[in-house]
Amino acid sequence: MEFGVFDHLDRHGGALADYYEDRLKIAEAYDRAGFYAYHLAEHHATPLGMAPSPSVFLAAVAQRTTRLRFGPLVWPMPLHHPLRLIEEICMLDQLSGGRLELGFGRGAAPIELEYYGVDPQDAQEIYAEAVELVLAGLTHKVLNFKGRRFSFSGVPMEIEPLQKPHPPIWYGVHAPESAERAARRNLNVVSLDPPNETPSSASAASSLWRLAMRQRRLWRAAPTSSGTQASRICSAGTDGRNRIPVPRPSICWSSAGRASPAHRQRWLNSSPPSSPKPVATTWSGNSPSAI
Image 1 (tube, rainbow, N blue to C red):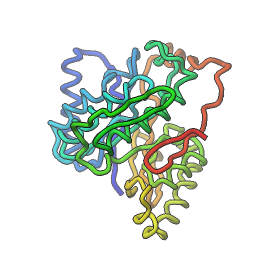
Image 2: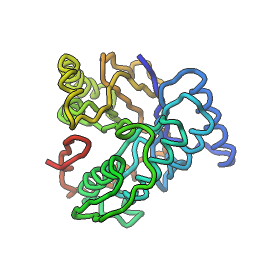
Image 3: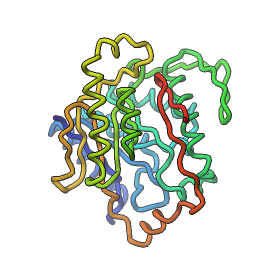
């Protein structure tokens, strides 16, 4: 069993420059202590989000550590241009000697998308298309892509990730069905559900991972396999019960953090009552598609 850390970089007072330095020293301590990975949340306009640009902070982590793997949990795709993100991923993976982990998402709080002028109801479609585009850019020398939101023709990919075909991917799960989708594609999973709700998803993923291990020859031969071999558990939080003994999949979860009551309530209530249920996302090879 290996352990990782999920950090919100939430504000607690004092000079911000000193705060960043202290958190980087903590990352160095994680590295010395043998933690497997350091995962960093991205939030905006909230005391939970002192790392609104995870790539900037993680570039510093890459230079202050030698073994610790790291990555965003998650990059909200509606707030990132896919072409720019491809280049940042390649730089971070190369700068760290191949220690980057990828995390993509729609964005947890509609209000944060709205601050950037993004309609939250468009988030799922942007997310699915942008992730497909990013993974195409990471695995091809020339990027050609045509979708509803993004189109590129003949864009040269001058830099590439060190890890092939790309760094490991983390997939957010909220229900057993989403955990099953992740397990079928051999992806790491992350859940922010309360501990009493997480076991159902973990159980669904675990049973499929065991099946995948029994059929591992087929998985290795399949040209559409993501190539991520899940073998770890990532745990976060201070409650010792927040650990699930699942044999194979990587799982990470965390509490909501220490935002002020007023901000937390605004964050939780920011989703319009009429918002449709998010479209389910599955993975085909290395790419997500809405179903």
